[in-house]
Image 1 (cartoon, helix red, strand yellow):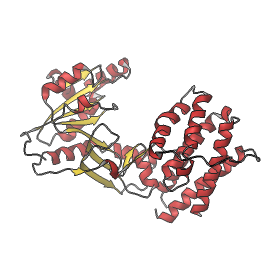
Image 2: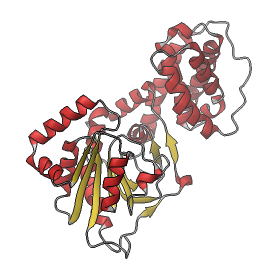
Image 3: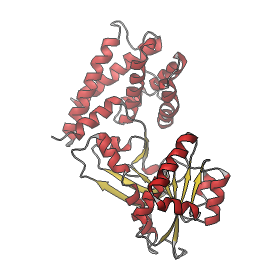
Image 4: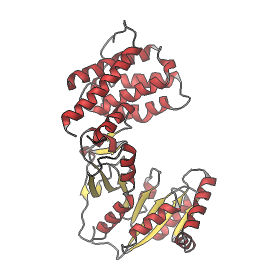
Amino acid sequence: MRGDARDRAIAAALARRLEEVRRLLPRAFAVDATPQPPVDPEEQLRIVMVRLWPKASAEGSDADAWERLAEGVLSLALPAAGEDWRFLDSWNNAYETLAVGPQYLELPSAQRFLATYADLLHAHVQRLA
Amino acid sequence: MSSALPERLTAVALCERLAKAEDLRRVLADLDIDYRAVVCRNGRSLPRFIAGAAVDCLRSWRVVVSLISRRWQLNAGDLHGQRAVRFLSARSPDVGLHATSVIYRRPVIDLFRLGILNPHIGLLPKYRGRSVMEWSIFMGDPVGITTFFIDDGIDTGPQIILREEFDAYRGLDRTALKRLLFDQDAEMFRRAVGLLSQPDFAPTRQRLEDGKRWYVMSQLFSGVVDELLEPN
C-alpha cells in the first residue's frame, strides 16, 4: 500500500479514537502544563511497555498500577507528539487498558491522561491531514 | 563459517513438544548433520506435558526410537536445569535450534559452539522485539524472517545468518500471515544450518545501534494493520 493511503488509514483510526476520547472528557478540563520529557525516552518507553502497562492491564490490578502507568505515559507526551509511532502507541495501549477498567475514569490522573491524549491525537490527525 | 568446523555439525533442537522435534528432524533430514533434541516442560502443566508426549510417541515410531536410543531427551524439568545441561554438555553441540518459549541464560547459550539459532519473524536489525510483523506492515516495510544467533539482549545477537523477505502475503489476514511466518521456522533452520556448514560462509553483522526495540501493538494500530492487509 502506498504511503499516502497508509497515512489516510492511520489518520482515520486516530480521528475515530479522538472522538471516543472526547466523549469521556469533561468539557472544562484542560491540560495544566506541558510535562517534562524524560532524560532517556527509549528507556522510559521500555519501562512503560515492559513493566507498567502489563501490571496495569493484568487481571486484578488496582488503582495504584493505573496511576503508575498514567504517570509513566504522561512523561512520554513530548516524544509521543513526534513521528516515532511507538511512543503514541504506548498511549494507545494505556487508553485501551483504561477503557477496560472504567472505574478509574474519575481519577484526576485519568482525566489528565485523557486530556493530554486528546491533544496528541488531534495534533497527529492535523499533521496527517 | 569457520576453518575449525567439524566434519558434521551437531544441531540440537530445543523444543517443548516431541512432535516439534520430529517436524524439525523431517525437514532437516537432507542435511548431513547429527540431529539431536531436548524436549523440556519448562514450567508448563505436568499432566499436559505427559499427555502430549504420549500422543506424540503414538503418532511416530521414530520419536520412540530417538528417545530409546538417547539421541533425544524428554525432560519434565527446565532447559536450564541440571539434567538438560548434562545432556547438552555431553554432546558438545555446535548449533541450537530455538523452538521453545524460554528466555535463554548465558550458561545454556555458551553450551553451543556456534550459538542458538532463532528464526525471528521480523527483519533485523530494524525490527526487534514484539509485534514486529505488525509494525513492519504499519510502517510500510516488507515483512520477513531473520535467522540469527541469540545473545542476552532482545533480538540483538550480532550474527545474522539468513534474512528472508516475504512479499506474497496479500489476501492473508493478520493471524494467517503470522502463522505463515511462524511455520517457516523449520525451513529457515534448514537453510541456516546449510549455510553454516559451508566453510566460507560469513554471517552479516548487526550492531546494537542499528535498530530499535518495538513493543506490543495496540488494538487501534492493529486495526490499521488489518485494514492495510485487506485486498484493494
